[in-house]
Image 1: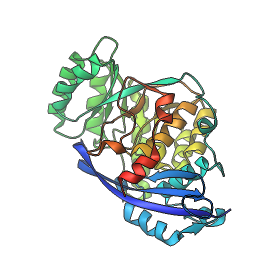
Image 2 (image 1 turned 180 degrees about the vertical axis):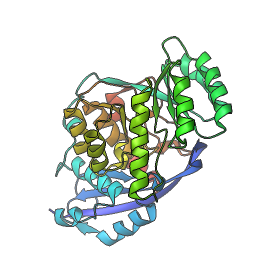
Image 3 (image 1 turned 45 degrees about the vertical axis):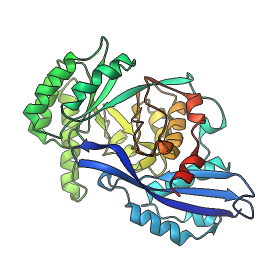
Length: 355
């Protein structure tokens, strides 16, 4: 079956720059793809997908995605789509999402029926880095949030630890923090934080250490051993995030007996359905999370979240409103995301917005 392949590169400013250990992030770039069945663009149903790469995670660059999309051509068949090289993980993800909407192959379970569990899932609120978190946590707590994700590793460790104590004091009853270091710490810094977390309401610490994308095999093994050691030495669970970019990453950490959390960003993994199925079979602790993508990628990721058969941990999708153009946002951040809200996301509106 031949389908029409179209793509649109986007460059969307955030409403407010996102500060992480990687620096200040003010613009999201990516590529939307659309597959249309029929002899012309308006003759059949369309399926949409989003390639939202983050190069410092180890994905392909957006320029590479755009070039590969141009190389695919306007009319494609299954064979040509399957020939997209494996290292184009985000693009392959986008194509799989678009194909599933057309009902061709690799359909997502939740796309064909209702959610695997309840019709709503809890969601964590994303707090800004630094002192601004203190100004926002009260408002988010009043809105009903009880799990809060705070970006750390951005400033001086001593300053952030002082803010950490203040932030814990602002938590509502039953509230818990997730600390996301984005791999910013060395061993001494990670141990200092984990010692403090042992006495605080911290659900888990996300990616405390990370090998550079340019590191050799020996350095990567050293950091992986460090993470396994930290997970065994401290009571606060540790989550893997940047360390999980491919299905083989998931398999390697499972084989190593990883005892902590697997934070999975479906938009960044070439075949998230397969990776999640393996994690489900292993009864692993999983948190599904956004990659600051548009509503197109959010819809695909949230469908997988509602299909997840394991424990419904608070999703890491409490990031919207995110863009200066609200037409591109996923569901507004709320303590719970409803399955029906996911179905109301309109990929065509995003497609038109970035034209």
